[in-house]
Length: 553
Image (cartoon, rainbow, N blue to C red):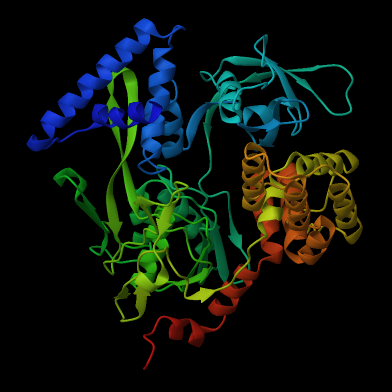
């Protein structure tokens, strides 16, 4: 019955309905209306209409794609924060901490109210404005964290009285924080990485981020930059018009950058560069990886299609869809996928087909064999349907188990331990984790209770439930236990094998504690294979030019 409710709710959000569908939609709406009235009248317990209907809507939208989302009046502010980078609050990132079954301060932003008032990373949140934050208990993690986060937010210039439990301090610590309008920087770090090469890290595409990139570029040129590295790694995107403006910094006025094609006329729009460029000649390398998506792909894909930049790194995510907000009754908002976008060569780089899914619900990925060839302005072959493939591929991927480790409480605990033992560290541009400290990290993690989540583990758990239901033999259960044991990673061996990649990440995460986001980003560049490749290309003029020329057959 739940699936029926989810499916029927599609009708509630349908616009531009064709005449032949009206009769069917009307019929389904009547069914749903009567169904819910019957539930409300006869169901043994009182229904929560807001909760039930919101759950139905979200489940229905999940069947479409992960980007079409419903925001209630209470959560609409989250959408505004995503697009503007602004919100009123304390300027801290919180995280669920299993050991305390509560939220902790996970990251502080430099110069923001929480940091200025004296909160510390690792502080366990006990109460806000006199109200106990409560423990998560049986709540979903996302809902619990959102409830605590909302309590920290509030109008600028109001005071939040926050009580925390702090490591090494016996008594509860009370901190008065004056909330403020917080603007998250779209360019967390920029600087010169050699006498003639400038570097700009763009973390998100929020309102006016193109101006932030322009200002950083102009400052780097004043410092002597003759070439530039634009880092879009781990940038999940944002506003498409800001992506076009950033491309415009390096491309002449009047270039068609983006075409959007949807079901209705209003969704079919085009974007061309509108302004005089900042620099048409400066050699440019763009860094990308598998988490570079959406507007990041518009920028790197357009610059590739126009032969204006060399793309270095790993294949991008492959999000070729565009969302638009639509207002709903009672101040709700529907962020709705309305079109596909196409970059200058005419290709759409959408990787996943959400209209066709496997039995487990996962969308099908377009295989490379079915992608089509397009051509850049100079005639270089490029492909659609699977993200942007860099001109120079440099892989720098962490094994999934270690990626899970970096998100774990055990990893967080070791960082806290290190900070408690070291009041200061070297400057961010110099700090390197010592051999002794890495050995201590490995020993701490291997002796901890860290157990990585994985697909194989989930599959084994499902199979174990099936065997239990089928009352399988003890031998079958033992065989499954043995299989699970054989698939469990040897953490010490894995950490030592990946030391070259893992140690710099730990160094960067520590720099985030001492020098905040800018320091973390600066430190990360000390041991960066993809950055090194970009520098090598920019220092070799002939190779740079050759990479932007068609391949001779």
